[in-house]
Length: 293
Image 1 (cartoon, one colour):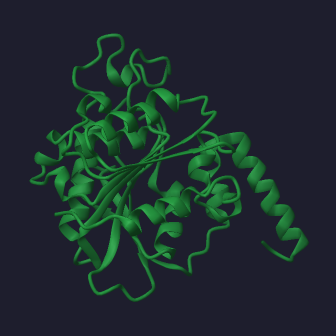
Image 2 (image 1 turned 90 degrees about the horizontal axis):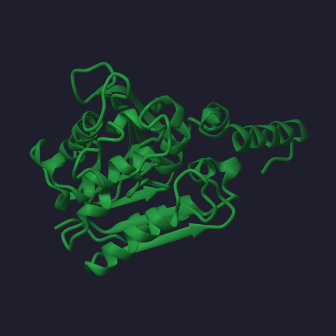
C-alpha cells in the first residue's frame, strides 16, 4: 500500500473511521483519492432545480473505437441525505478503469417525497443517454448503478418503464443495471427516516422493484453484504435475483461475507478494497455485458 509509516498510520485511521461512521466518513476516503486519473466536469445541470446537477468523471486514457462504457451512479442515504461530492472516490475508481461515470444529486426529503426523486433520477439518466457519445462514451453501453436508497432508484429506472418513458427513453436502452445493497421489497418500513418518504403507513402502490420483474428487464448485477443489518440481503438482493432469473433475465448475484452495508460502497476506494472485490466484479460485469439492442 505505502512504504511511508506515517501515511500508513493515517490510512489505517481513515479505514477505522469509515468502518465506524459509515457513509458519513466518505470525506476520509475522498481525502486519499487521487485526482490524476480522471478529468472532472462538475456542477452539470440536468434540470432546473438546485439539486438537479451531476459531476462527470472522464477517463484520461484514449477511448476504445466504440467509446467508453457510461455509468450513472446514485448514492444512498434513506432519501434524506447525501451529496454527489461525497462520492468522488466512486467516480475516480470507475474512471480509472475506463468508464465515464456520472454521479448525480437528486432532491431529498423533506423537500420532496416519493416519487419526485425518481423523476429526478430519470432526468439524470436521460442526460447520460443523450450525451453519451459527446462524452466519448458508447450510447449502446450505458448502465445505471446505485447503492442503498440509490440502488432502489436504479432498480426502479431499470425495471419500471414509467420513469424513463417520461423522458423520452426506455429501459431497453440500458446495457445493464447494478444494485449495491439496495432495498427492493421493504414494506412495511421500519427505518424511521424512510417512513415519511413513502407516506407510512399509506404506502403508494406499484413502488417496489420486485413488482416489476419481467423478461424485458436489462441485464442485472446485484451485490449485498452477507450480514447487512440495514437492508436484508435475502429479502432484497436474493429475492430480486431469483425473480429476475425466473423471468429469463441474465443476473449476476454477489454476496460478500466481510462487507457491511456501508463498506460495500466504501470498498470502491483503494484503502478499503481488501474488504470485498466489488469494484472488480462490477467492472467485469460491465466489460462482459453486450451492447443494448
